[in-house]
Image (cartoon, rainbow, N blue to C red; front, side, top):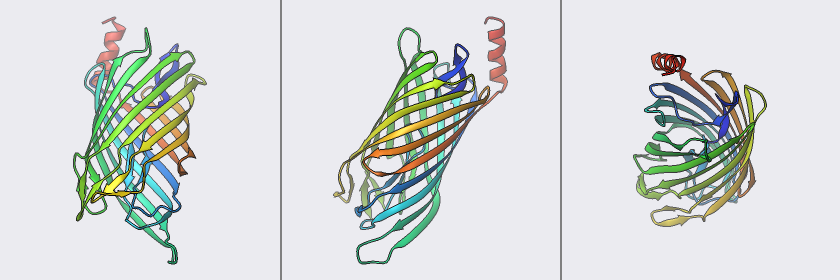
Length: 299
């Protein structure tokens, strides 16, 4: 739910929030591709690698106990579909797959590498706008459930839930926004072991600037805190916090057709960087035509 460009405007400027609600009866296609390069020196506890695929969404890549991961390259492709239930509510689904190459080493042993490609997860969610940006900041809420998550040896079903809020206000041509989210990970079986991934807290303030009627630039800071994971009741490492600088650009190709690019650079807590591209396309079907006719006739 970060601040990016889209073909909706205040004062004819493309200022809005990335996940503003899909119009009633319309469908939107959301395609994403994320590349993450992470450096984790000295980690040998089996803590998962996390790749951010959206403003408050993450894909977890489990690692083996005792494995020291020095460097990893991961590509995550996401396919999402959204549908407007009402003027203020939309539902959506998101499917992600990943391709990863990990290079690891242990003291006194030869370095080794491992590659894998697989389905990562499937989520179902809901976005709702509680208040528009009129007599005060807008307020939007979102909730999503992990229908499926791929572990190292098994699939987990309905074991993760994300809840969040976004508030924003536009002072033409600037938009200030703040997103907060909490991801709850419940215990699940992974082969012959009981895995309890750590829960995640996220805060992301940002400022966006409309350069013209097509381009929006934004910058912000993201803070995350992940609690310690457990495997068979044994703590895997310790709690971790991280701060990242987030830079983004949005380009409105046409009405209902937007391309967004986001670069996340680690400032503290861990090493690594991520780059994400998202394409959001609205299908202009019969519902859109009816809506346009109502507006044209004052209905």
